[in-house]
Length: 159
Image 1 (tube, rainbow, N blue to C red):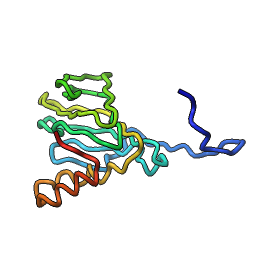
Image 2 (cartoon, one colour):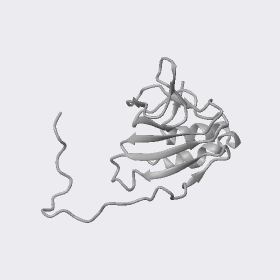
Image 3 (cartoon, one colour):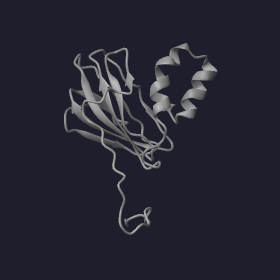
């Protein structure tokens, strides 16, 4: 494995860092009491990755097993207990636990603890996951065709 080709060709560097204070409100709030913080979107990282803080309320929630064809997904638990499906079994993950799922890997996650939980979600490359996050709560209202198109658009295949 080697470093990729340079993307920045300048000689002096540039002032381009972004800062997000910890107390910034989430971009998306869930009815279950959680929310999503868009820490670094694919648009803001030139498509390299997406990083989100996913806060889950105490109400059980989370997607069933599925896979993505074009993106990998990684999970880093910040607080609480989150059950993550690794394609074989559900694992109770706590603060500091990390799970990486390559493209095509079957996975899912749920908060079934009865307590709030929080994790970082990392996607590579940086697909536009915001549309998925913002639309998933409307899936029950969609027709079968709309639901199929929504999941295909967002590279989500249920098993």
